[in-house]
View 1 (cartoon, one colour):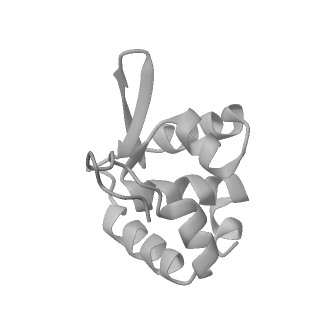
View 2 (spheres, helix red, strand yellow):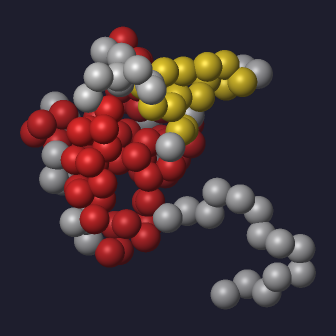
Length: 111
């Protein structure tokens, strides 16, 4: 992909692009999106939290990750990731970064 060399590997890049696209996420949801093992995603999320890029909180038994608002280079990182998302092939964007995040209105016809 575009930024894997900068972030160290493809999994790290996918995690950051997912977070940029959706704003928050949890390990199993991210792993299911990309078809990767949960352990790989957890390792990257823990690394980004340790470095201060992401912050997490427990919701029941699920750990949800989101951007750390105190991260010094947050705006610059967001700009870089937005540019990378805009240059991904359309089919890749549609497959991974445009999933429905809310339920469909009752009675609304399927497309």
